[in-house]
Length: 90
Image (cartoon, rainbow, N blue to C red; front, top):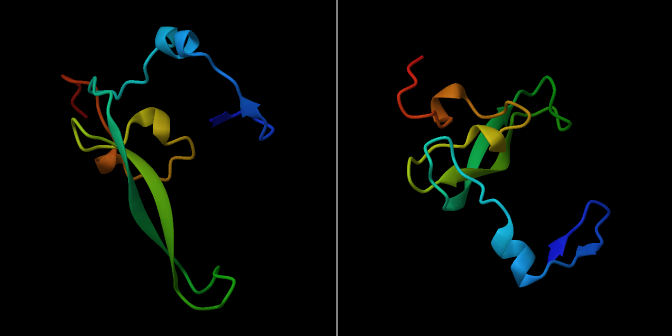
């Protein structure tokens, strides 16, 4: 079951799901996997006063192996791990 914004179950029919636009990666891929990325938190800002390792769930495209730009809303993923549209060179 899919949840709405307030945690209420969102009730969708099969027809609604079939007609919904698929989410695509910048490379065109449509199948994704959830992976872990880790960030090291400095002891200066860590609540424990010690260096901490913080795990983050990220979504990775199975076709290109990169994180789609739409799945990086807070710019936490380094640029080298982000998917690019084919033919775009930086």
